[in-house]
Length: 223
Image 1 (cartoon, rainbow, N blue to C red):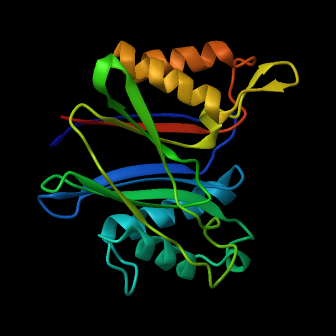
Image 2: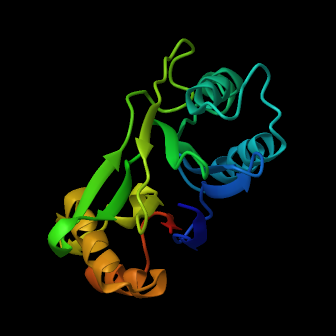
């Protein structure tokens, strides 16, 4: 079950924001994937997000094994205490996919669950919300983070996203929610449409021409 395709989209809000996502191979078999969302907008949100991106790309966190997501989150929490970074925290989902064992190890800190959609018998699809307990990075110095492991079956698709993609106003005073967005993901998977088509649907649901928050999404297809 090799990971054969990764697609992503980012739509900024009216202001500069703090969404960042990336993926890279730790070695020939292990792929690291993550998406984070810094609280707030403007330079105050964008600056720490770039610092975090550089730390993760260079694997520069001290005493951290980047194959173990919970160690990555613990290392980030140690490196970005909120009281030293303008009282800003951030959420993150971080996973490592092993293409030999077909397993995904993941951990999250206050972030929306990643959604794994897989084919099932009788033409149905099943969804799994991949999340672990743990507060946003920066809130508490001694925060503990867990990690979980799941098996990836062929033809599965993983979606990782920020909350800006579903916390939208679809009627004046009425807001969309995560469950409704996941229903759209299930339809998107079954119709084999692309991310542009998915985001076109989200734009139709959003009552405003612009989004109030940044929105980011990554789509990982497994064969």
